[in-house]
Length: 182
Ligand code: CTP
Ligand code: MG
Image 1 (tube, rainbow, N blue to C red):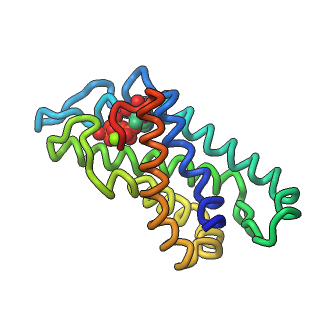
Image 2 (tube, helix red, strand yellow):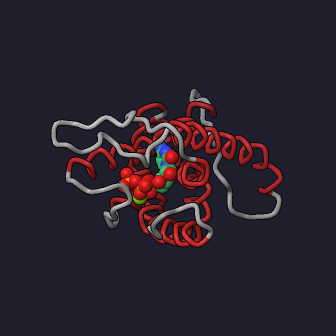
């Protein structure tokens, strides 16, 4: 479980940071499609996207810097965000940007189903960014991905993510950065 969270941290953080620092110009520029609904909606902004990705990558770099010292405190061998030909920055960028693109992809379909910004779509809201992060990382760094995300880790991530997501969103709701507690 610790390994699963460790590997997913650069994908988790972009979402929370987008919620904290997001706002301003929406990515879809306010445009609507033929169905009369927004392309993505006001909940997807450039600031949220860029700040989120930057925070995810920075956290990953911090994890890399701490890797050796943390290993002295625990028997768990924490995985590194690099492997053979794969570059740390590419892996981290894929985890962080895949996470927010997965989230945007979901918003696109929510709008097509006529769902307003913030409308809840259980499970999809909690796993969109996991699937986005995995897809991007698998495509950019397949060797590293397969090496680290084995079946046990993936199942663990799918189980703990909705729980973690719900907890952080309830916290976000009470400290006022989220409009809805999901
Ligand atoms: N956010 C942002 N830019 C992004 C992603 C998120 O600014 N690319 C911010 C928005 O302020 C958003 C908040 O983070 O309201 C929470 O994100 P999320 O729950 O994904 O958005 P919702 O407002 O629920 O919109 P949607 O219905 O499209 O999911
Ligand atoms: Mg939402």
